[in-house]
Amino acid sequence: MKGVRARSFLPRTAVLETTYACNHRCIYCSCPWERGDGSFDRRPEMGTAEWRELVSELCGAGVTSLAFTGGESLLRGDLFDILRHASGCTAEHIETVDGELRIEHRPPELYLLSNGRLIDRRVLEECRDLGVRLSLSLPGLDTFEAHTGLDGADRVLEGFRGAKALGIPVTANITVTKLNLHELERTMAAAVIAGAGQVLLNRFLPGGRGLANRERLELSAAGVREMLSIADRVLGAAGRPGSLGTETPFCAADPADYPHIKIGTHCSAAIHFFAIDPSGWVRVCNHSETRLAHWREWRRLKDDEYWKTFAFRRHGPAACSGCRHRPSCDAGCREAAHITTGSLAAPDPVMPPAGRAFAQPAAAGGALTEMESRTV
Image (cartoon, helix red, strand yellow):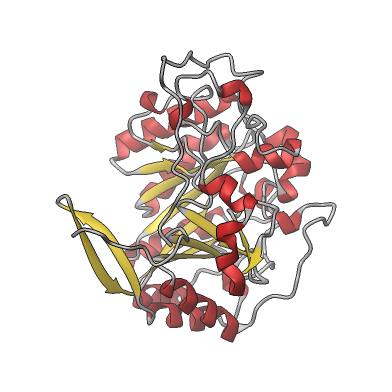
């Protein structure tokens, strides 16, 4: 099939932050509205009807995956009304099968990201009936309360068991910090034994409430490598897939050293996914503190310079320009750099000092080129 035209420039995945409210007080939380200085204001949350309208608009614009999160989405009494509406929408899925493009019109893929505290039989049955895939947060076992402010690791593990019993795909979402690194192997093993089909690791990123706790939570480059070594070992032994949800620079860790865990080195914001906050404002990713446009005016994003900086990868430290990995590495999380330094072109906090000691010279003629146009 030739000449397939995308429905819009929007990425295929939308992260829908349905509420600011949360029943945990995670010290690592990067939600921008949890920043202590209040610089990210909490504008009025959208109601049921507007969320339904938004979901329909996104599906019509070519979005094929919807990830519902918060805050804690399950605190919304109308969450499953919105999910039922989403499951009845039609999205255009374009996939490559045996070297050829295939287009299917079917409902979007639905994901629910939860801290697990409100997961019960009713919630699980609703997820099963609507085909919702779950992701439950488990930031440690012994350190669970220290991270979230509440005891509850056993409750999350019970959620994995319940999901597995009902045939619901469920991912263990583990944010790794200095405080829980020592028990990462046990945490991953407990999640897998309880029924998690895969593991998504996220290294702590400064932002939101976590910005005030950076010193005691943030991993060094050595800590990131230790995290990946542990994860690679556990996943290899368990035969389960796993990934690191936070892009990581080559100078902090080389993906080739960890064959059992998928590690991204490119920033996916505004390329593979974007976020919409509880008030309906679009951001390049859920970590970003920069609101760009209300969802009703999403077409304006095509001409928004901040959006284009990410969409065309016009970011990255100048110190990395001579590195041979530059074409395949965005020098870590751009928003973590922005939040901590005020510049999108600053180093990721995890990078070794001034470039990066591990950076490799670029081969002659190896300049990065960017495609400056997209089908609209």
